[in-house]
Amino acid sequence: MLTYKQRFIRFMVENEVLLFGDFTLKSGRKAPYFINAGKYRTGTQIAALGEYYAECYLAHKVQAKTLVGPAYKGIPLAVATSIALAKNHGVDVGFCFDRKEVKDHGEGGMFVGAQLAAGDDVCLVEDVMTSGKALREILPKLRQEADVNVTAMLISVDRQERGTGEKSAVQEAFDEFGIRVYSIVTMQDIIDAIEQGVITGREHLAAMKAYRAQYGA
Image 1 (cartoon, rainbow, N blue to C red):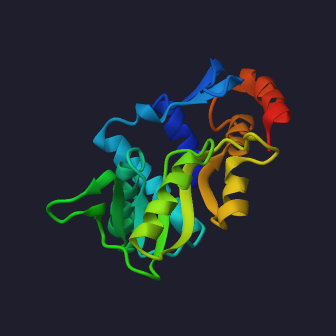
Image 2: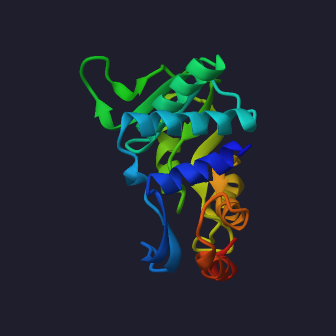
């Protein structure tokens, strides 16, 4: 029986989110793989994605009163994860997301959804973490809203790559903010899945391992 990590890797491949070949990344690096989360476009896909995030949440025993989805990509992820936790696991957590600018009419405020209060445990939900930019943008907004406790951050894939320094963005997030970032899968999980025959792609293994040797954290 496949683990939820292995099922997620198959899910990414089947939905053309995980691609293998020759790609030039935003960083300028030449990579043998590419992750395009923009391929998640249907109700079936986002429902399944929410379940994988829910399984990651439970696997790491994350405790949170509210899931926070940084605008814009984090919004459907936080909503889908909260639905999956409630519907399939009996865990009812709130969700909210930030506006790009404060609303000064109607209910007003910076956040939409569950109201945040001092002392609340919250978990951030994002798609990937490349530089940690989304984390650095959402934390000041959260602190301005309420003195919450960020217990964790969930992402889909940890690329396990060095950023500007020797550490990955995930490692830097813990060093700088004390926030543990949990991924559904890592690049090592994907390499293992190819080697174990969970997905095809053995012809890309050498290039993937060479890339990790050069840029891995």
